[in-house]
Amino acid sequence: MFRDAMLPSPLSLDSSQDSLKMGIPAHPTPDQRTTDLEERARSARQAAQVLALLPCQERNRALQNMAQALGSHISEILAANQQDLSQAADMVKQQQLSPAAFARLKLDADKLAGMIAGIETVAQLADPVGQVHFVRELDEGLILERRTYPLGVLGVVFESRPDAVTQIVSLAIKTGNSVLLKGGQEALHTCQILTQILQAALREQVGFPEGAVQLLTSRAEIQALLSLDRWVDLIVPRGSNAFVRYIQSHTRIPVLGHADGICHLYVDQAANRDQAVRLTLDSKIQYPAACNALETLLVHRGIAADFLPMVGKALTAAGVEMRGCPISQQFWPMQAASEVDWQTEYGEKILAIRVVDSLAEALDHIQTYGSRHTEAIVTEDPVVAQTFLDRVDAAGVFHNASTRFADGFRYGFGAEVGISTQKMPPRGPVGLEGLVTYKYLLRGQGQQVADYSGNGGRAFTHRDLPISPDRTLSRSDFNPVATIIDSE
Image (cartoon, rainbow, N blue to C red):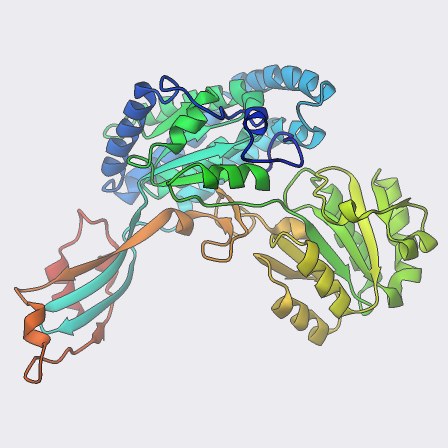
């Protein structure tokens, strides 16, 4: 999941002052776009070319080595993280870092165990590289195939989430991509020790290319990275909407944009009340700083008188501050909500509550204020549930389930580079499938287009051929001619 350090709001992304506040130089000097960084990007490109042809078992072995190495250096990782936390605590006091960002920065033994488990899970997933989507005979001896390939070099910029290092690196290696990482300054020491441990583990593997995993450490390198469209194939910014928009407007490199998570839970009049209370609590307090945490609770008027005292008592006991509409305030003591509250991703124990008259009003509220991240409904009415699932425009739409399930690991992806809220794919948690592209491979025997033109031209057969298991092998491992013969 992604969130970022506190950014000024509102932001004028064209202003030099705001770009400096974001840690990005507004007018980088030539020496900031360093030759050194371009050389590092070039080495990442060279490593990617080797990774693209590395057999899956070798990439999996690299992941297993990484997991083992992290398990052997837990004390060093936690010590580096404590150093970051000490400095970040002062940043919070000076309002340079939000409490939510501080919470995301913290690592402990349990979180490290989860990071290691995530790498091991990625290693067990099917190889996304070299997968054949279809094989089609255009004519006798003219065979078209669509096959997946790595993207190449990824540039990932993230804030406050050192665990993003292991998620991103594991997905990059599994998909045969190199990666240039740039974490926030508040997580510098933790990101450095994690990257050093992973790099050392990879160097021990014979044949694994140097330069596949690199960490950028200076703020000037962000702007320089955005100019490397010759060497970098995809930029993934993990931060606020303002940060993502800045990145998109300052680079020619394709950007996989990610938005804030203003997630809603709608409690329908046909909801199981006890279940709705449990799902509200889990969605809000299980990890308030996550982008899939609940920010606004919508309650049908027909259930409000019974449900709001129940959920209000539970939320109060959990230390959640509630901000409600006038009707909500009639049923449980809470602060008055303003228009800003419906538009806010708190990232902490604050929850906006609104009573609505109908499903249609709930849908309208979500359409107006939602961020297309994750939306959920609690109801025992299957028709209402299906209407909600069909009508809500979001990457994740859930029925009788916590919004916190919107996560690559929980979806079985092993890990994620982030959650994409854009309409075009990849959408939602972006795992392996979002980090590969495909090529159309055409194998012929000297055919030319002129042969198929005019009244007397040859006709295309356009016959789909079966895909044999052999076709999913690494490019260096299969014989395409033999495979086609065997499949016919």
